Length: 234
Image 1 (cartoon, rainbow, N blue to C red):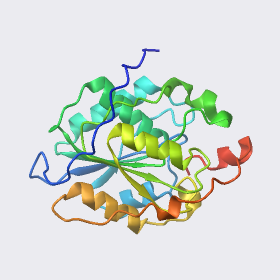
Image 2: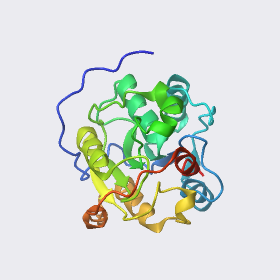
Image 3: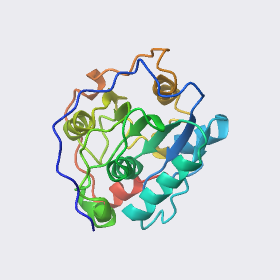
């Protein structure tokens, strides 16, 4: 597997005050391991939002970095408009790898990215399944991003999520105790997430991000392999 590039110094977050293109963007969802079922907020968005469609990454149960990166690249090239990503879990890591390997610059085809519940690739019960995506790329992203974390996500600690947001130059948002922020979280169309998405789609319309207070609590007990697997995708 190709080695990652050296880690760069932490960047400041991108300003949301300007967009690289005047046309309305396309929202591309990037699911994670095992995909996103009909009750997942990504699937619900694809149903209720006319601007939203899924990147069909394939290999949902046995994901591989390079094929997923290629599918992301193809989807961006075929979009015909600026792109805003709505990525979940392993999809966030795949998106970071695409940004790393594509050598993107700002401004470019991507207007922003909502990065929801990126996992810690060292999560033991699933480490083997995620190994092709390791190590997590930590180069600053060349577009505005919001990283959304949950206080009781079994895949990543709040400290690790904050650190990743800082390395990527992303705004950090906490949504309280919402598990892996997937179908099991029971979010429906996830109105709070759509508020954050709109902040990326139209930077001229400020919208408050959830505060950090909801995540200022002790970490939950570690899950076993079966429980952790149940939190995947959905």
